[in-house]
Image 1 (cartoon, rainbow, N blue to C red):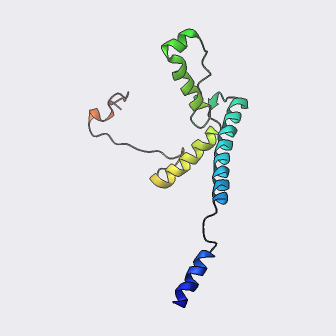
Image 2 (tube, rainbow, N blue to C red):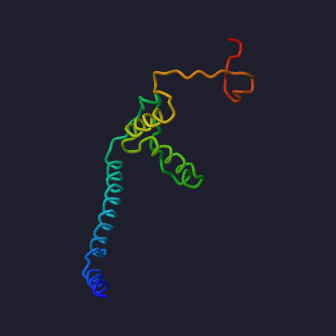
Image 3 (cartoon, one colour):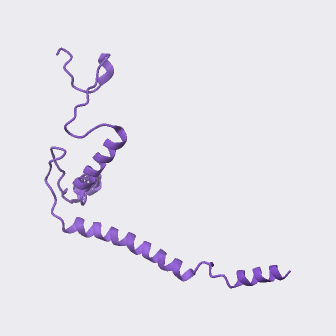
Length: 135
């Protein structure tokens, strides 16, 4: 009986109970960090100069579309703007390089210098592609 009384006393004096102030401070920190990253990407996107060419993809990048009543009404402005922003996303080249490394790790396919050979067994294997079958 004395043992149970001591256990109850210990349980009442225990400081293991979660501190609501600590949890709310941690939640506020996570929210601030999240919004800080969003604002950082937004500011970087607004004030950064747009690249015109992607050297890693060897192609010209999309340019900012012109806003007009016609392009807004037919929906082409938003489609072109999506392509533009996908090409000029902040730190895009860095993210592409990281993606290429991760893909190489998990797929076993290497980067730019390696060649992937595909064998064709029938003529319909490459439908829609211009392939010279005479060679």
